[in-house]
Image 1 (spheres, rainbow, N blue to C red):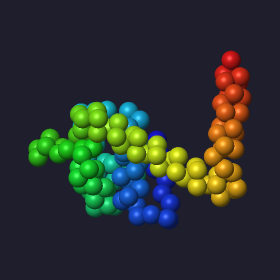
Image 2: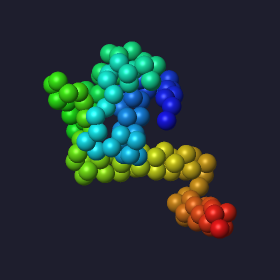
Image 3: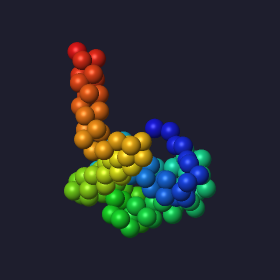
Length: 126
């Protein structure tokens, strides 16, 4: 998964979201040791201080923890990971609904379009 940044929000906030996505999608597993701050910063192409800020925020919300001499780890609390996953999903749904209502669709129209799309997709898979 590559990093790409937008100009509409701070880089550290985008790093928090990107790292959260990597945790909830299983790229970083529960209890797994993370690469060093410098390695993560180099991978993302950001300043190590910016990455440090993002990791500190993830610790604050409970998705990561530090062990003084061993580094940073993904939480082993699967409930916390599932809550983060649901939060990301709700953000995506809200963006989608905002965009669709901006196009003039109401919820009934949106549901109908989604059902049509799912039917087409199911036929393509077969």
